Image (cartoon, rainbow, N blue to C red; front, side, top):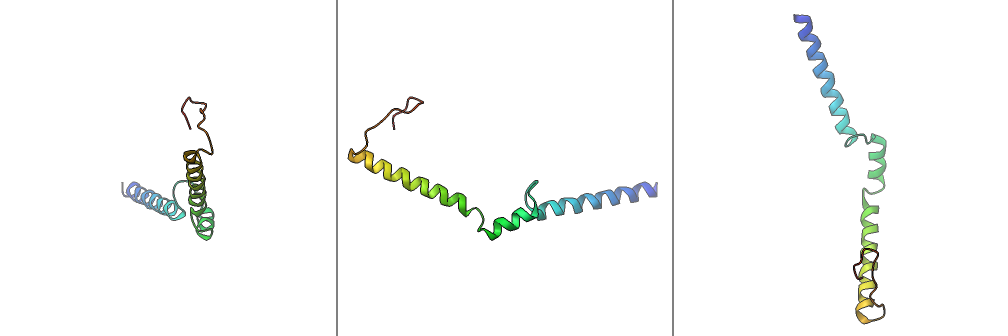
Length: 81
């Protein structure tokens, strides 16, 4: 009886350590190395930068269209751009 309880405690302890290591490394299957690399590169800055540029391009395009330099066109889904 006592041996089974000790084994159960040991399993629980190992489970906690495993969980702790997983959280240390990041979320889910991300490896610690990838997390460190991401921190070194400045996090998700690249994604934000891309979105910002895309937004600027769209704003410029909308301005040109409103001035009449670009005419409206129909998109593949039937909406007008």
